[in-house]
Length: 388
Image (cartoon, rainbow, N blue to C red):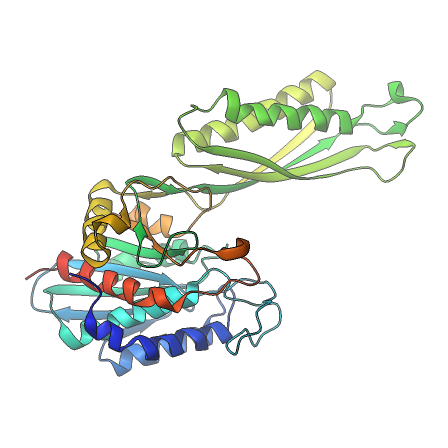
């Protein structure tokens, strides 16, 4: 069953909604206008509308019949704190804010699915349309779960779409297991002993120690992580010193860690702490490590990922579905919902990403041609999951 004809009829209106949201981007937990638009549309189409979870979150619910079965469909609403470089008519009207990750498209596709299902109601049970704030670093998904999302709106499974430049329009990709990585940050502060650069023996040089630590960190992935797994340890900055002839008393370095399994996440954090503790003992100084865990890995449940791929094949054709795409090292806070309920995320093709115009690029724009595929996918997920 291909893209739904009625959805194609809605294309022009949905594109207008998407471009309006794009022109009015809002940052983490500030999505007041966007949530107002979402709530108004859901109410207009006859859904139950619930507001207030995670401050600006919105949940719309459709019910039919007496079945206790329920599915959750999720979209994120927030933008990024970056300047848009596009000059089309629907460019951002706010300096320093931009929908550079396609959340305007995600929100619009879920709205389109809500409208279609409100018109047809070809299911038995409940569909919860989850519009989440603050995905871009704010952990809005975590907050919604902590504030009782699945207690107030029980779901047997939950699904999400993220657009993917580099995959063609009309194609969908997913996989069982890890799809995206955990995203952690660390700060290492080396407290040594400064000295005149001409008399290094009178001090303890934190720049040399930092260099040793940087090299040792690179050995974690190559020598501690199973080569079949994916992991990244990046040093993003080194700060220390201010003069040619002075050995500074301290150096601060920091970076990010990306891992795709809880076991490797624990392993990498432990090895960073071990390396720093060993360097501190070797040089007789203090080294402080602040390791902060961010979003956990986005891990698709096997049965739900297979189900999502089957539905995708109905929409796009089997040849346009990748069922075992390689994981990426970006992160997503839909991971918190997948930790709480079975489910899966899929990547929806957004076109080639020409000239390096991918996510978080100042010239990025969600491709409206992808909207009918995403809406149809959401709709068929709900109808198949809640078949009478």
